Length: 243
Image 1: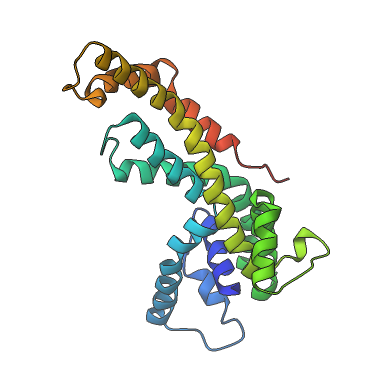
Image 2: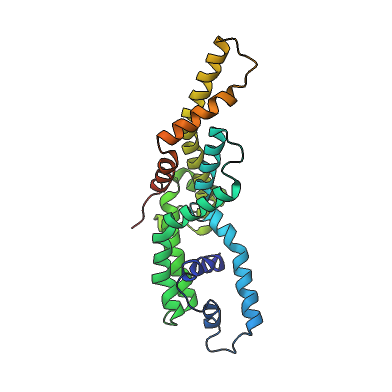
């Protein structure tokens, strides 16, 4: 798990470091330096785990699920396309995670890059910061579930929860929260569908698709309430702020 956390250390550092291979070179301080090809191989190996980190250890899961449910509730099919939703979820995730990433960079990556902090201490410090964010978003019920399954605990404090228990509990909590928000997002559009279907049936227009008639009204409602700003703002505000 430590090498996964070290990959997180590289996320905020990529925006600040001038030499991306410098961090890998620093790992060989006091030893024979790695060849450039081996450094590139190590860097590419780290990049392969970044999608898993983004999905399971950040707020990306909650955001992308809510946006997908919103698109289905409106009934637009593939509009906005998947690429737009994923890109929007990605940048909103960086917005939500920016305080955490900045702290990882300032307290772990920057000292490590300056060779004033050993790699193990930097990994541990970055892991503690990410752990603090994840534990704040995780339900106690989910923590107890995976702690019991893993025969771990009891824990004296939230900081004592290991990553092996916290990561699946965090992912489960994010899924539950995403579906709760998605349910609330779906309700007003469901009401419009029911009203349109009732009106069409009362008029005897049973051959007309209710979805075809309700779609313009749902779009109008979404535009009038400034739906995208409301949804994205609510999503960003749904995360517990960690000091």
